Image (cartoon, rainbow, N blue to C red):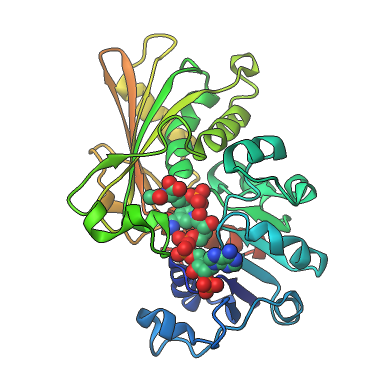
Length: 341
Ligand SMILES: NC(=O)C1=CN([C@@H]2O[C@H](COP(=O)(O)OP(=O)(O)OC[C@H]3O[C@@H](n4cnc5c(N)ncnc54)[C@H](OP(=O)(O)O)[C@@H]3O)[C@@H](O)[C@H]2O)C=CC1
Ligand SMILES: CC(=O)N[C@@H](CCC(=O)OP(=O)(O)O)C(=O)O
């Protein structure tokens, strides 16, 4: 049994984490922290947890977390995670960080895209990018997991087989992605206010969304051995969709030579054959198929000589809390699918 802490307990990904961990046979939630100073109970913050857990939140205190837990899930905004991670790591707590703070290996790139400096560059050296489908071997011994972003996981899983086999040109790859509003978190913002986003579809972050360097970095690693190690360059355009949850990305890439849909589908099935949460499907996947699950569904088409990959997942599960539990399972020696099927 592993004692765990949830840091930033009032948010959406924290709620999903608690729901998953409550049905995990090898995890016990011992601490939940919040900045709210009236010690709110978890089920007061998240009424869906009523009757399922009896735990009051405490203000964050690294000593308290270290006394009670071996693993801490940080469900905090970027910036806030790297403020607490060094305190936890120096006390021997293993950290699974859901924010973007430890995903980019170069602190200069982080500062460019996040508009503030990285305050824990040595943590970047320790962190392992927690996408099990690509980095499964590195995850079990790690003390610091950089859980991937939701758009990022969708896009990387869609492109990794093509990049790793060097089947596509590496510049000008187009990722047209759409997310439900829970992707923006629970804290109110004008753009996610109901009358602003309901019955409306809008692009945002065009040419400057912070998931661009994350996608490029990871795909660059995947394709390091092939294509002469050339960098990967994507045009990533996110859109906000008036639905609660789910992400769908349609990816367009230029093949280097002749390809067929049949061969590409075979390639994807082979590439992900040991990955229980990637479903290579014949139909065109829709967000409803993967909602409330830890699956990423994807399919491949060839249209007018271009390769199209259509991928979707649940941003709060496979895009956040679900993959965090998948990483926890690998770190603690459980079946990868525990509490997730
Ligand atoms: N939503 C999604 O689909 C995804 C989210 N992520 C990432 O996961 C992390 C959590 O996301 P999500 O749960 O959606 O976010 P929320 O906004 O729903 O929750 C974050 C929680 O963190 C706490 N918090 C907010 N600001 C600060 C601060 N400055 N210092 C300390 N604590 C703070 C708050 O809890 P309290 O007030 O109780 O202290 C808040 O409820 C983020 O980094 C996000 O980018 C990753 C993938 C997908
Ligand atoms: C709809 C929406 O606003 N989505 C968020 C992405 C959420 C996420 O996964 O990203 P991080 O973990 O990197 O924060 C955004 O575009 O910033």
